[in-house]
Picture: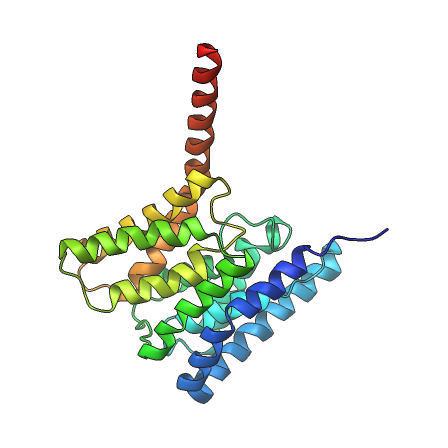
Length: 261
């Protein structure tokens, strides 16, 4: 029996290629510390994937490398090995593996990990990024759109809100929108956990952009990464509702047209 070209691991490989510009620039500017954080994240995820593979005959996925990259880049700084391992373990198990692995999860495991670390250890500062790392999100997004592994409508919906906010002159921290774009590419536009319908994807991006604006103007003292991760978590939880709204509107439109005929 032959298999089609596009299976789970093909998509994972394309996502790895998509995020390669981000990874290279982040490692270039982060140096040994960034490489060490990435190594810890990959090792912990590999152990948990091995455990679940042996316990449930559940094959590991290369998508774990994507989750490791997002966690290593966005996790609070100076956590130490123990706290980082605890957060990654919670996120990868409760956010992905208990659902049957990547492709069946409801929430991005990196988003779960980062939210757990942020709420569990609020005394640790969130990272900042050099401009070239943030700019590297643009070629990553373009590669993802060109290959079809990142949903264009999610990115475009958030971009429209961001452009509107900038055009309206809403006073924001200068780093909020660029870092929100970085988190958009890494977490919100995940092809598994983002919306599945056309309208739902536009709403998905718009809701994320709206939440970033809400938190940036009303959450005093929050770091840009903290704002973007919180917005990503709430957007992910609302995604099924957005798809439900899109389907309900489609059904209502079909019934209205059918009635006219």
